[in-house]
Every structure is written in structure tokens, then in C-alpha cells.
Image (tube, rainbow, N blue to C red):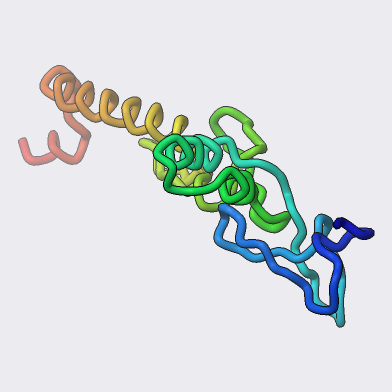
Length: 141
């Protein structure tokens, strides 16, 4: 039975392991004894896809699928590529693009960015014979 902000009623708090690999005992983040304790931050679309596959294979229960698709309030990330805010820190990872900029991207955007980076590298190799050499090469003449 849910009571107030507690996930469960009783003397001891029950902690639930979420998809971001953190444990939470409350729905909302709470300041307790000078320490911020995370709450539930939302549902990660990528964790949800993983748990659906496990659920179909009967490797986890529906309750486990529900909790493992959630992330805590401190793990919410925003993908730089698509703007998706329903991504946990386990799935929104840094990616260094062709210009050397590091961006936080979800798995779908990382795949697209890797493809774009590869195409750009191939183009540079193919185009290099047709590009005028740098001035430092000409000084050797």
C-alpha cells in the first residue's frame, strides 16, 4: 500500500533497483540529513526496449520490466542529437564527432553520428588527391 511519498509502508524502507542501476526509496527526490536522495526521474525509452525483449523471453517478471525501464531523478539525460529527454545516463553517452566535439547522444543518434563520421572520413580519403596540399608542403620545392 502506498502511503505519502513512500514507495511502501513499514518500518524499513524498501529500495527498488531501477534501469540506471541506482536504488530509490521514494517517488520524488528528497533532502534527508543534508543529502539529496534521488527519486524516480522517468522512463528510459531504451531501457524499456531492453526490458520488453527480456519480458517476451520470460527472463523477467512484468514488475521487474516496469522498474528496470525507469531511471532515477539524478540520471535524466538529454540527447544532443534528437533532444530526447527520456534517456538515462546508461544510454546517453559521450560521442566525439568528426570535428572533435564531444556530445551526449542516445544509442540511435550515436549510430547515425558514427555513420556520418565514417562517410566524412571516406570522403576525405577519396578527395585528398584532389585537394591542394598545405603551404608547408610547398615550401620544400
